[in-house]
Image (cartoon, rainbow, N blue to C red; front, side, top):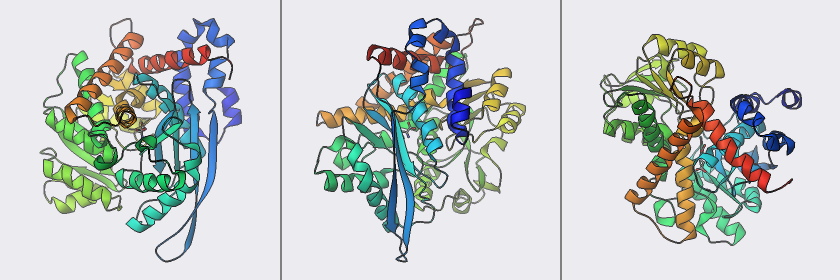
Length: 441
Ligand code: 2IT
């Protein structure tokens, strides 16, 4: 850790993600001298390759804009690089390194053969027109196409990248590569190779996992009040499944504040989340304007100020800090499952664990998204489309197996489960073993 801190002092999220994994695996690592001898940790924390490139495009006023694009090919020990693209103004190489590192362990947990990768750009989609989004995606692909492919590196969406962006990028990829294989990006539209349920999969998988966490602790998700952060793709899928399970979603939030929904989110409101996202306004206050009296907007507040049983961060890394955790605990929250990648600060996780709040980390909870991307790759490679029941059944099985892996590696002496430790050790063992068996490369 001290070597990394010296080498990458300006990459705090990366250091945070690595520290959490190293702390979790310390005991297991020391029981395996062959890992130490092969310098597995030193190799595993370093991305195999990072591509940085310039993205130049023209905005609607005819002005030339320049952004930076990246693809971090983190680890290919168990399969082709796989992971999303993030378009957000705060994107840095350090942020994508943290996400690529997390992705490597998450993908290992899915049981599918996928390595870890992540990419994106500091392009800010907020306020951009559809034409600007398209021209940016095309300019981005003008560089990225050279290093991706269905058996090499398969990008998908993440914050700021949904079905629309995947469409524009796939179109440009085909033009540049003269490759008409549908499997080079996942999260595609349903008529051109996309998998049924991929848009919902991160949220659905997260709720399947959360339900198992809750039931393993002898409680019931039915009737729970759930606070969600964000209103994007992930929060949308989570809201649908939580409602189907009989829970009540009482909050959604955005960068501008929180919308409290005392009677629980309705199907109409869930549908409206899609309109809010497509508007590129990035304001949750739209919900209160559309549903006056039912959704109550408070500017500047987070979802964690709303009284709830279960907190589900669905937006961005480090969106829930120690103060938020303490506020939730004081308000009676007894479960927090991270749906965003590294949604909680380490001090928040510690506060939850000390207070006996059930806590599970993003790399386990949100793995249903990338797992369903893996299922999309399988369908593309065999030129077929599965039914919704088929995909949902497989997603459910995968989330169950991830939960089992967490129980296997994370059960404490008192019988409770440390999901952080369980997920990190399970992911690490798989990647470390694969690296060991493939020699010094
Ligand atoms: O963080 C993630 O797992 C994703 N953004 C989804 C990645 C994928 O390849 O579907």
